[in-house]
Every structure is written in structure tokens, then in C-alpha cells.
Length: 197
Ligand SMILES: Nc1nc2c(ncn2[C@@H]2O[C@H](COP(=O)(O)OP(=O)(O)OP(=O)(O)O)[C@@H](O)[C@H]2O)c(=O)[nH]1
Ligand SMILES: [Mg+2]
Image 1 (cartoon, rainbow, N blue to C red):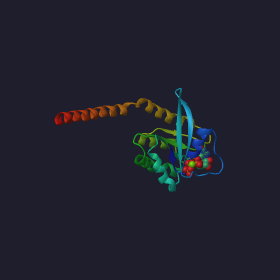
Image 2: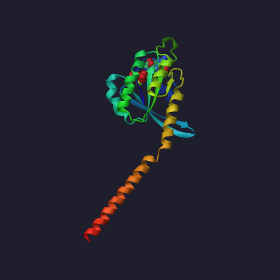
Image 3: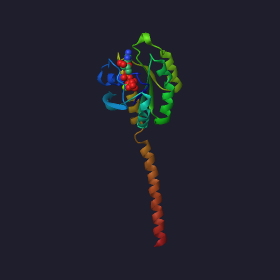
Image 4: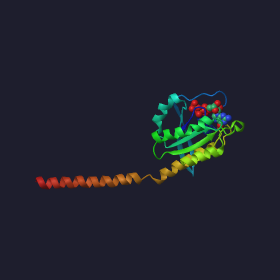
């Protein structure tokens, strides 16, 4: 799921990744939420990503909140030419902490690095903030395509790695508990039969 202030480039980043193109021209702000699928190859295995593009505008925040819980990964964007979007990252991280799954994969992205003359946030500032919150960081450009594929691939790899590592663990624990419960019920039934016959 893509999150961050309105205008940071979430939709453009997704379109760049999905279609390899840049949405130039007038800015059309996302209304509510939208999604696109993309199949990609990770270590010779096909992985289908369902990527949700959220609206950054405040008035759609309650819609976004409802989707956090089901997200496996969050790409949190700010715009390197917009200091306020960077300053709001802490608030976004608090929101993520409140609404998303505890083990959600989070990556911080500083977008629009192609606009070198308008840059207001240094790369080091992004790195420092990411380090403080223990999340990976990259600078991207939906316009030039810089690091776009790399960012999505890194997240997809992490998700695949997690899925391959833990498929049976919870089931096994549940199975063990279930077996003990079954044994307990059976013992109780046998004791009852013996008592009343
Ligand atoms: N120079 C430059 N402009 C960009 C880049 N990414 C997006 N933009 C421009 O920034 C504006 C906003 O982009 P969107 O992708 O629509 O922003 P958004 O984050 O989806 O905004 P909301 O849908 O309102 O949350 C558009 O005018 C884009 O053309 C980029 O990497 N470089
Ligand atoms: Mg958008």
C-alpha cells in the first residue's frame, strides 16, 4: 500500500512501476483508494503484487485507515521538494503504528529526486529519519524511473522471504493445541461413560 501526503507522487510511482510511464501534466488527486496488480519475477518465482494507492488528502483518511490492517507492506512517501511532506512522516509513522499490522513491512521513499534545483530535503535527512525508525530508505523519481523497480522489488523480496519462512509454524502450534483439546474431550467422554454405565 502506498501512503503519504497528497502530491508526493504515490500514483505516479505506481504508474511508473506498472506501466513504465510518467503521468505528466495536471495533477489529478486520488479519490479514496485505488489498486493495481503487477506480476513480477522474484528469484525465478512469479509473485503477484496487489498494490493499493491511497489518497493523501486529509478528508479521505478514514477510508485509508480501514485498509491498513490488511496491508502486508507499506511504501511511505515524501516529496524531497516539499519539506512539510517530510515533516509529516512522523505523523504517518504514528498512524501506521496505530492501524497497521505489527509486523508490516515499511519502506521510506523520498520521491521527485529529479527536481534537483527545488530540493528541500537532503538525502542524509531521509536516511537519518529512516534509521531512527529502523526502516529501509531509498530516494526515487517517478519521472525518471530512478529506483522505482528497485523499491518494489525489495519489498516483494522481503514479503516472499517471510511467506516462505513461516508457512507452517502457526498451523503446527494450532495442531498441537487441537490435539491436546481432542485428547481432553475424549478422556472426559470415557470417564463419563465409565461413571454412568
Ligand atoms: N518532478 C517530478 N514530479 C513528480 C514525480 N512524481 C510525481 N510528480 C508530480 O507530482 C504531482 C502529484 O503526483 P501524484 O502521483 O498524483 O501524487 P499523489 O501522491 O498520488 O497525490 P494524492 O493522490 O492526492 O494523494 C503530479 O503533478 C506529478 O506529475 C517525480 O518523481 N518527479
Ligand atoms: Mg494519487
